[in-house]
Length: 345
Image (cartoon, rainbow, N blue to C red; front, top):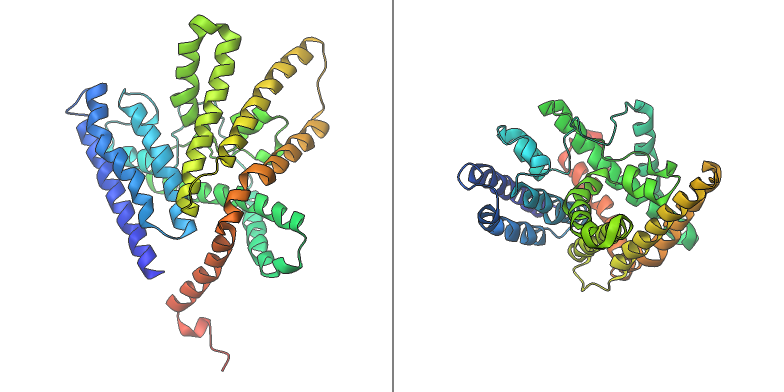
């Protein structure tokens, strides 16, 4: 554990140094292809840095952030676009936005900032702790219950980490940022789930780097309908490939492409749903949220069980993740005063 924490700190020191280089290179090299070439070594470092971490809880989030989010933000920055183009004169804000999974709140942000009751976050923490404790009795649980726990664990784990990062940035830097999640369990459609509720940090980056460029390039010869369809499918495909890469860092096993197919399936279904909703609304038909909500969640859970979890379970990543909680507890106990945890003898 001590060695892993040292490696984690070294990764972050290297990351911050790389981001500082990107910040200062912008004042020397103008936007465009030359700036892109100057950042190629940084992209390479971001790809190999997560390989220095062996634990799931350090390695997977770092891979998601550096290999995907930070790299995509810097790609946009090479052309003075995206969230990093908003704070080029403030190096602290630049480092925070580039190195952390956050997006700054702007006047053009499509995600409204809503004050949520504090008890809601507290209840999610309690539920997360209960899920972790439930794993101690997994041999007595039905496989369907375990899958349900995995689904809740994945959602709460990602949201709580992003919420912690967001709260730290807001408190320390006073930087207004977009909410990372918007209660995805309240989704009434796949479009609502992926576009307005689930992991909004990734959604915005994908919209800027994939959806808008593909739409603009396609609309001239495919028309609005074809361009929108191509943009939606391309966005889900890229998301699937990025998740496949993150899975590689977590499992250290060759990809089997089930994760990519998960996002391809959801991309196709989301586009079909968008067209169907438009046709039904023209006729005055609309599913009530009491019906559409459970249908959406059921579809997500079924496809997650079918395509998203098998690769992790096959490679023992789920058991590794669960086992790390016990290691973390023992590590914390070893660092706290002995009177807090007296020996049973």
